[in-house]
Amino acid sequence: MRNLSQQEKEFIVKLLRIADTSNNVFISNIVYDELTNVDIYLDYEQTKVDYRYDIKVYNQNTHLFADFARDFSWKIIKYFKLLKYLENNEMLFLYQEGPDEKTSRFGRLIHKNNFISAGINDKDAIKLILEFSKKTIVINESIREYVRNDFKTKDDIRHFENIELSKKNLAVAQRSNDTAYTSNELARKSLRAVKITIIITIIFFILGSLLNFYIASINKF
Image (cartoon, rainbow, N blue to C red; front, side, top):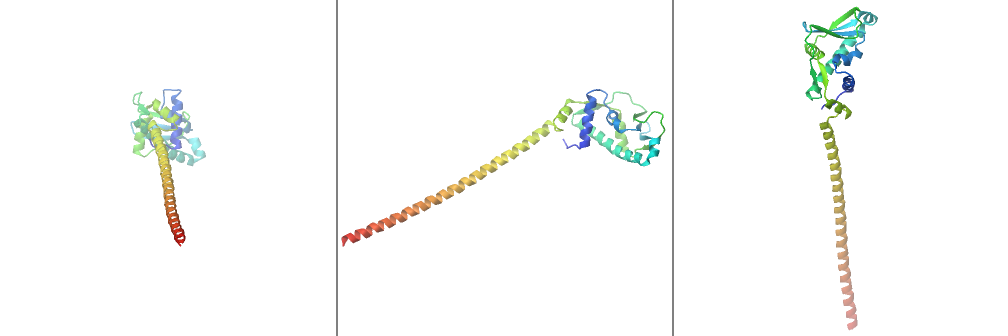
């Protein structure tokens, strides 16, 4: 599997924490804490997604809403794509239990408070949000194991183990090569020593023979 960002890892941990206590796991449960004074309004008939922001808070700082809408849009699209990726890897599946609705909403905008709204313009993003927001997220045990193994699958672990084994084998091969080189050097040095010994022996033999011949010559006279 691909490497996950820290934000994606935190999303999965939060997803599992909710799944530990409830079977009703929706994207709305996971992002609920991030929607202070905001609702996400889903219009399935008009194919629209709007952010509804408390107008009192908006009037205090008009830039906050624009910043939120931009940042949260990117974030929630990443979340949905991550869910789709995890589903493709059989770690969870998405299942629509309830009937189709005309409209829906989730968030923490206080009921009946006045709001200012802003729509999402990206058609692919709208389609993704409308499709996945109404689906229950059903967890497989494999994703729990994935998190327990520091966000590594069994295949990932085997892959890393094979890499480590290859490194060890390479190190052993290098040591063997170094040992063989050292042995060859010692053998060459030993061979040179033997050659020198033979040469010295021959020289002494020749000198001894000459000396004996000289002594024998003197004795004749």
